[in-house]
Image (cartoon, rainbow, N blue to C red; front, side, top):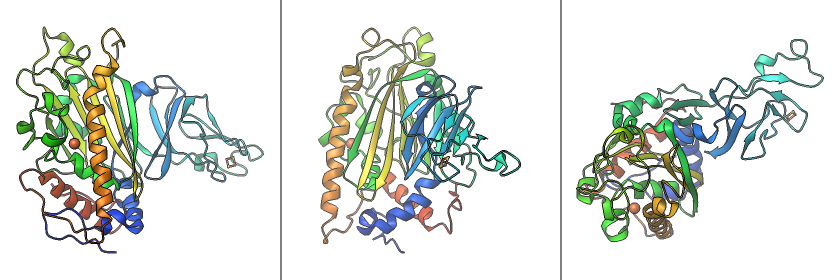
Length: 384
Ligand code: FES
Ligand code: FE
């Protein structure tokens, strides 16, 4: 299989967005090989809390064990494969498969199999749930489906966006989440979210506080690697990303201890090519992610976070908290659907990218091609 590019400053060729074969390889070589934000520890605060998420065609259980640790497992019973957790979230003492009652601990170990005693028929140690790589950094839970051990995502965040610590993500709570099913290839979303060439014409709400000129050349629009991060510029005097630049919730983290939070502070970190983007302002934060489902079907997940102690109606109001990104997401998603529709034309060939406004698309495309060209899953290592 080949994926052709028409020069280094275009996006991918039409077949890369429309081919089932390409999507199947991406599932293994790209989605399956990256860290992906899945949940916040405040989503599963108590021992036995679990949630189930789908990513890259896999159903994954994320569970809090008795010791407060977080584990992640493929949602498939080791006996004959029943999808063990049928609900999206809950609290259990252990996971019992409804089919033949094989039972697993919160740490994924097999602890009972009726009429198949441990040691004499099977060795339970060999039949625990398949583990998903999981790492928790400051309350954020990341998973990676790869069999190959991956370098720490927490270290990457510390390297690329050390400023995020100031907002103390472990003390956030999710105030809202919105999932958008979109009829588009996931790379159309990726490219849209890697450039702000379209922002001035499309996003009046986003541009109310965002420093568009500062954004060109900063986090969203400079050449990127698999990880990138830095400051997210707001217009002078703006305190946060809101319609009037005024705070929309109580200050996060270290900003709570300051007389007044700094103006024009924002920090971001992102993973590409399957996008996870974390943006923290002084009073609220956002985590966005792309969940590819099929070649022409993708989910965009937007989550809004506030201080863990913030009270709705007192410290924040959901309409104001969500106003900018609800509008911006709707605008972006209709751009993505329209782009995907237009790409179906047999006359479509990718046009030139703006080296000034779209360099991050170019670098994401190069990264994607390298991952797709790796000889086998787990073999891709980005060169510094
Ligand atoms: Fe789960 Fe048989 S498939 S116990
Ligand atoms: Fe946009």
